[in-house]
Length: 296
Image (tube, rainbow, N blue to C red; front, side, top):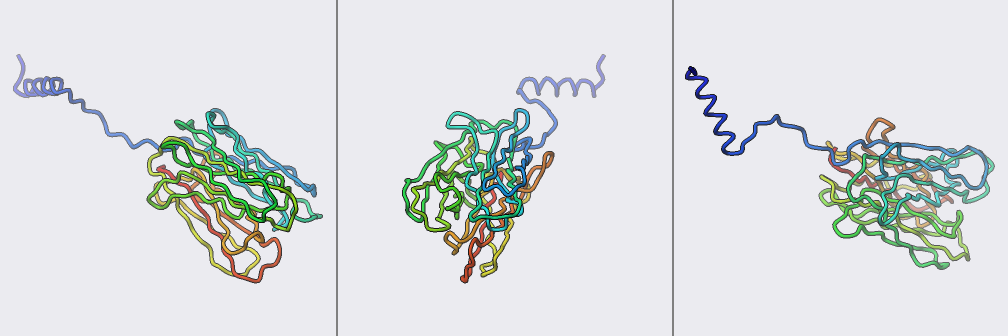
């Protein structure tokens, strides 16, 4: 014979079954980009005119963003390629960074490629567009994510310039409350050249991600030879990719460092953009760093 308490519990269970209610423990929200880490690969250090390194995502991880660092060359080397692999129907998994000397340099130097990697993301692809190829001083092109996809990371490639052009802008759109969907790559000749050349912009795109925004920080405008600025993600967000913009230097500034933090077991949350003058510049100029961030 049931007690009064047992009878009430039995009625409660029957009521839950009848209404379809299920009592389950609360669980935390899923990360927008699970398994996010930063991978690095560094080229040989020598006095060769060209250096290249490829950072590859481990296991089944995919590439959401890119970065690089020139080591030991301080304004005499320029990154010609920041090229994610993949395609319009293929998720990228690695990034290749290639750099030339802008002028003959006797010292040893190297280049580091940074890959921001995550567990597979739905709809991840790489989109590219190429500017016109001619001998104009400035070239620009914008790669836009298709349909409703959003921008997680950026890249570029200079074609035919071989150390005679520098990327002044690698600028994602979006804002502090708006998901980025495109990236513009703009490049100037570092020294006058008769060569025909062009610039390619690469957009790494995925299906919409929770909390995706673009944060930015602009450094002080001065005539110093070197400046550095860090853009960080808002609290509770992680860095999927980044960008930069040089302001007021038009071909005489070189972004030497485009370095996400993090590591092989740590999600990046900031990016450091450091730039040198290639030739002495008397006017004031500045550097802007852009961080593309999603919910952690």
